[in-house]
Figure 1 (tube, rainbow, N blue to C red):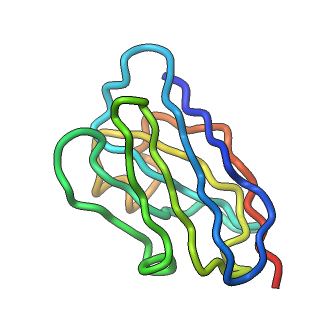
Figure 2: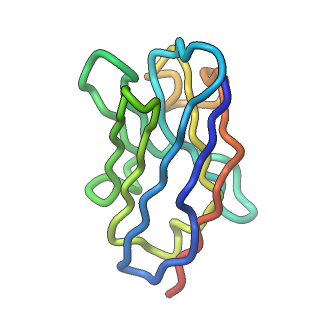
Length: 125
């Protein structure tokens, strides 16, 4: 499966961006999807995750709770990340991810089965 992310760019602090990730290729069998990010000179970190088809439990990193919203469109194999009230510290390369252990995905990269190629988000102060 290939994950292709779109929608990164430049935003001012307090602004919004919406990221999209389209899954293509062989049948998408992962049970959970989400987003990681890598800020400049830092390690990659968890951002958000949700079940891909069934279930409603959604997970967010504390740093984005109340500002970011993850959602999905199963018919179009797409997952979204709506980012509101952006802060300069949200500047990072954002990666869409997939896996079969949603709790594990919130903890570390070992639970991830697939990565997208990343899209740059830059927030100016």
